[in-house]
Image (cartoon, rainbow, N blue to C red):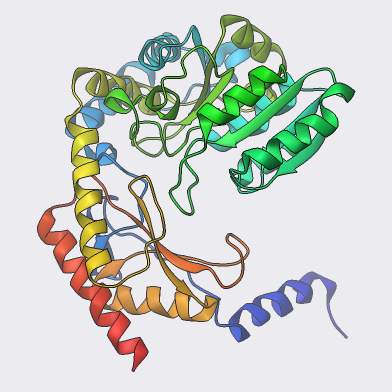
Length: 394
C-alpha cells in the first residue's frame, strides 16, 4: 500500500522532467562568485552570474561588510518597523535616493519582496493593474496579491496597451501600468517613453522594475529611467541590490509620501526581519563607488559588446538584446539543456533557460558578461561555444 508521506505525486512529476530531458541538478560553487568559479573541483568561466560590475567580490565592499559586523553584529534583530531599522539602513536609503535622483527610497529584503510588498500596498479594490505579458515572476506574484483587477498587454506593444486603456480606464479609480525596465530573458528595453506618454494621456500611474537596469544603464548606472531621461515622470521605480550592486536586497524609489505609506502597509517590512548590517554597509560603499566613477559600468558594456560582436561573427543567434544580457538561442528544450551541460564540461558555466520560463521552442543559454571578465576569458568562452555547437550538429 502506498504511503501518502512518500510524496509519490512529486516523484512522478520529477520522473517526467527526466523523461523530457529537462531535469537538471543545481551546480554547487566551491568558490566566490567571480569571473571564474570552481564547480566539482574544476575552474570554469562563469557566464551566468548577475554580478555585472564584479562588486560581489570587490575589496571595498568586503571590508565594509567586515567592519559592519564588528560594530553592529550579524543581524538586524527585528523587522524594520519595530527595532530592526539601523542608522545604516537610513544612510543607504538616503544615498540611493540621491543616486536615483528621487525624493525617497524604501529598502526591502530582496527585489522579489519589494514587488510582493509594494504592488499590494499601493493598489486596492476598484483599481486596475495593467502588466506587460513578459514581466518578471515577482511582478506577476505581486499583482496576484493585490485586490485590484488585472489586465495584460502584449509585450512592448503600445497599440495593445492603448487598446486596454481605451476599453477599461473609465471603469476604475487608479490605474497602474507595470513593466520591467530591462526584460531579463531577451535583454530588450521597455518602451518607457511611449508608456509614459500613454500613462499621462489616460491619467495612469507608472511602475518600473529596473532590476537589470540598475547599475548598468544611465549615467554611472542610474538605471533605465535615467537612460530615457524620465525623472519625475515614473511614479514607482523598483531596483535590486543583488545584481550590479553585488550584495542582496531591493528598493523602491519615488515620493516621500510613498515611503510613509509603505512603512504602514508593505507586508515584507512588517512581518520579516530587515537586512543585516553586513549587507547594508557594502551597499553604501557600492553606491559611493558608482557615484564616484563610471569605470565599472563602462567596463561591463565594453566586455558585453565585445562578446556580442564575436558571437554574431561566429554565426550564433543572439536575438535583439539592448543590454549586456545576451541570449544564445538553441530552440529545443532538451537540446538547450544538453548544450549547457556540454559547455560546462568544456569549461564554461552558463545556465539553460527553457519552458516554462520562456515559451516552448525558444530555449536559450543566457550569457551574463561582467566588468570582471578579461578579454582572454571571453575569447576562450567563445571558442568553447563554437566547439560545442559543432559537436552537437554532427
